[in-house]
Length: 63
Image (cartoon, rainbow, N blue to C red):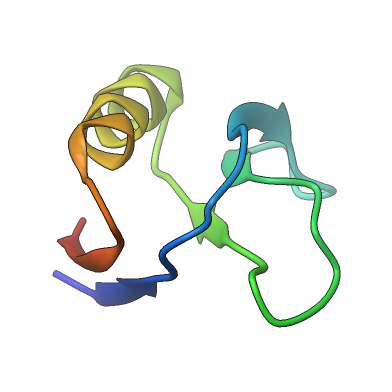
């Protein structure tokens, strides 16, 4: 299970389709606060997105 560092100011995250066709959680930032979490399938991506939205003030997220 990989661990991701989540910054304090995440912004609005969404699920997009990566170039490989798998779901990817992304917050549309390109600098210091960028989040890009690849997922196995769409159900897993929705589950991870719920966990991400439940985090307050950043922290670590185990996927």
